[in-house]
Image (cartoon, rainbow, N blue to C red; front, side, top):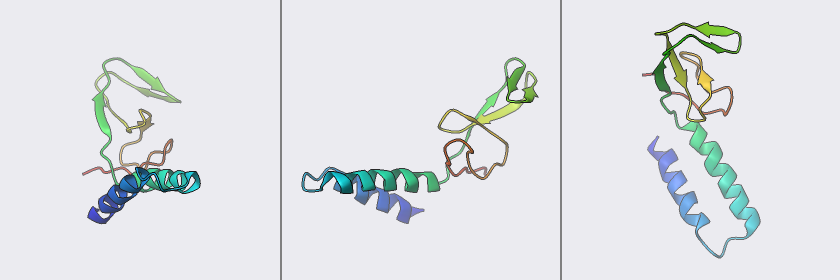
Amino acid sequence: MEDYKYSLDIMRQELKSKWICPEIKYALKASIEALGKQIPQRPTHLTAKNDIKIGSFIFHKGCKIYSCKCKEWVGYKDPFCKHCGQKLKWD
C-alpha cells in the first residue's frame, strides 16, 4: 500500500512541473485517478432514517446502508463500487 501512495506522491509532484507537455500531464492525471481507485477505501456507513427505495430494493427504517466516496450506494461486502470502480475495504 505504501508503494501506491509513494507513486501517487511522485506523479502529483511531476504534474506541477512546467516542463511537462500537456499530453504527459493528461496521462499522469489519468494514471493518478486509476491508481487512486486501486487503494481500498472504507464505504460510508449510514442508517436509514425512513424507508428508502434504491433501484428495485426497499430498505426499511433502521437498515444499514453503505455509500462509496462517489456518493453512490454499494452493496455490503462488494469488492468494488459498480459506479466508479473504487476498490472497497470492509474490515
